Image (tube, rainbow, N blue to C red; front, side, top):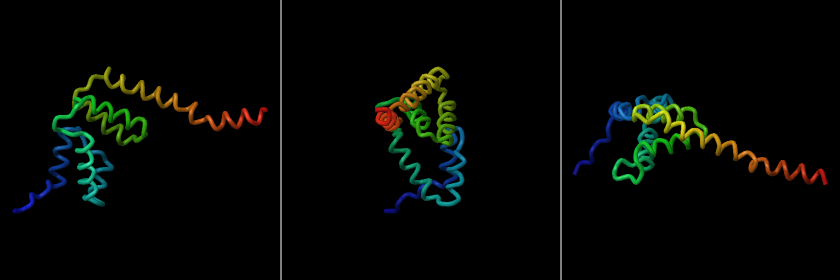
Length: 126
């Protein structure tokens, strides 16, 4: 029994362009340096964003991915997932409903992050 050949990178990129609208520059560059990492990236993507009977709608998963990319932060991921949202026709209002809580979550992280500073300041004032 012969193992089926994996699709070529050109075939992979053509399919991803249909779904994502574009291929991130970093992924294109990676394909020239180490194509096996592109295939691994796609395998991980299939695990993270399953096509078969997902519990969440594809648009919801895209918005969750967008939130994670924003919190990361990864400008390349933010650009890629924003393009995917555009291709999927996700409404501007839904995107903003994702962006605003991420901004708030990041802003509210600061008091916890600076707790050691507050502790040091209150100890030295005593």
